[in-house]
Image (cartoon, rainbow, N blue to C red):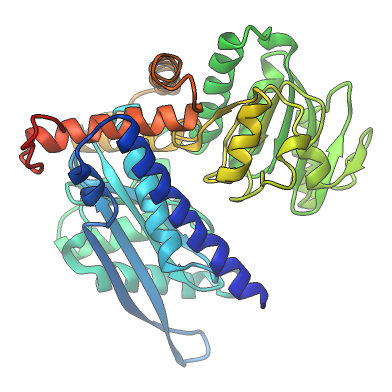
Length: 431
């Protein structure tokens, strides 16, 4: 089996696992089967051709997607990624997670996800700009501040969002910067947005440590992935007195049982591009990192990292999912049997969409909050969401796990909104 086929199978399994989890949560919460019928299929899935003039004068046509899963709470919201291994099923799964995530933290958005199938690292800046603007034109009217609001994702950034905002505004013949979030500050971006997902991971990890009676200032942390999420979370952990003892990225990992100097590690990565070779550390690989003796493990890299084959090796008391889908269903069962609390992705990494909501509000009303206000409101949102979900889990899901509790809590809120909007039949007097 080729690498490409294996990757596609893995991503397809992610959608299957997500749908299975949604159905299980609906059954456990004793909700109407109609709720599943509404959630199992996106409201709209669009595939578009994206013609791009290349630097050599030729024209290439890329394939683009936008999946709009559910908008019962408000406009669709979700990232746009540029990646050669994108599949339709992976985009559908990611859009569904966004719906659940927004419901869970109580922001008035629905879930969406977009992608262009390409190796953006092989494109020039001008080619990426032309491709981005062509994507906006190809999607036509399905984007908009009150319709569908993209954000940065894999291999897209603030500059990408600025191009989208400019192209959309040109098409609408009026400034409309609220069409995207994650923009540069100069064109309506929000302070703290870049660090928001990692900061959210930090906040829920702190709340989880309290729930497990782990002294947070003495906690030992291991982080898989040292990109935007992992590096920002690591710095916050270190600044709070925690000991970050292991970190890894695509190059491998570094370990020091006495704790790594995160500021120096960040400088090292900026100079070399990788954590590999960091002084005063022992080299480890990604699998060894997942088995490090620590209090809190943060998988913040890729999906399907904790599996049936390695979950039993996890020594952490708490796993906080900084990435989307890093734990397989089989691993979830093993971790529960070993009394490891898994704080699920739809809660743990929702800091990004929360601050995206703050950005959208500021764009709509024409004012700006300072960094202290953004961070305080993010902390309030994340702490409240953790406490509500953890309480629900302890009360309703004693025989299951926190992921099940989070899905049940999120879907109950979605079902209630669908009920009041008249989307459900409710013949049996329940939704």
